[in-house]
Image 1 (cartoon, helix red, strand yellow):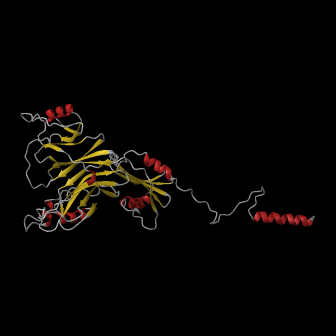
Image 2 (cartoon, one colour):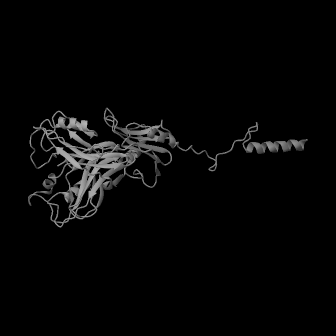
Amino acid sequence: MQKNLILSLSLLSILIGCGGNGNGNTKTAATPENKVTPAPLITSDFVALANSADCAQLNNRLFLIDQKQILWDKAGTCADASYQQTLYSGSVQNILCSKADSIAGPTNSCVDPANKAFFNTIITHLDKADLGLGSAHQVQQLLVTPKASTSLATTALDLSFYRGAGSGNLVIKDKTAWDQLLIISSPPARSPNMSLEETLKQKTFLSENTNFATRMVIATLFKTPNNCSTTQIVKISSDGQKLSADFIEQELISIASCDPSSSSTSTPMSVVETRKLDLPVEFNNVSRALISPSRIFKGNDASYEIGTRNVLIKDQAAWAKLWLEFNTRRTPTPELPLVDFTKNMIVGVFLGNRPSGCHDIADMRVWRAAGKLMLSHRDTEPAENAQYACTMAIVSPYYLIEIARSDEAVEYTPMRYLR
């Protein structure tokens, strides 16, 4: 009996030592092998948020940082919410920091000031794959469904040549790189005694007036330094994940130089300025998709009352009505051009009234893409530092073309052209 009691006490002592609590349960000590691991961040909630977002047509990206934080970087066309960067932890309800455009002005704040430096590093390096965090951190971009392509307001600059042998594409996001391009691409000074600053002012449209924190320059150079050829950016657009720079090329061979400002080698170039977005830029040569017009109707003396409008004419009655409407300043009214609307149609634009003779439509290009007809027109206006006088008269520019008939939708893209 005593032996059995001793045995029972010994067993109880063992159980207590192992964490027994007298009711059959045991308590296991925490070890590295069995410690509780935080639940993985549920990224699907963030992807759903981004996919359903408003004001995110131009930029809509998600980054997973160290498997525990999410950065949402978005930008759109809303007047009082054009951009926002938000840092989350754990869930879409837990916002750590936010920088945004608002009706009251820009905001930049963190719930905990200790996160401020980390957040500022990220939003300063949105164009870097690692967000400027370096190898000590893991950064992954999450897949967000691209949105429908949206055209960016774009200004084309009268910088036609890269003075030297060059090729390829350029994306310029700071003033230093921009000034370097100007030094290369600007024509020689009018006077040997003219300073570099004065020389650049002949062609400088951005460096004095543009904030490179919000604007950037995109350029394409022709494939060879053959300065009688041409290249032209016709559209800049975004689907939220990348920028698309559509351009055309036309190769022309000539023995003589076609660059009047340089006797040395020069390469045709097209330079545009647009809103700065920290997205990769994809350059698309759309030359093979160009649609050649069979006729062009162009001038700057349309009726003052016709206003600004896009035109798509597919029948004789509508063509006759438009012809009479915009030719009221001409006496007598020119004879109506005959168009076979079973095969062709008229597309084009009217700019409405403009304040001087320096306003015009330089050219128009139409190409086929994504099941649509893309129509881009360059609307000329004088640059701030223009070295020429403008006729002070109200003009009303128009540009109409006759092309093969199509049932595809037409997308009109205006582009300012500073000369």
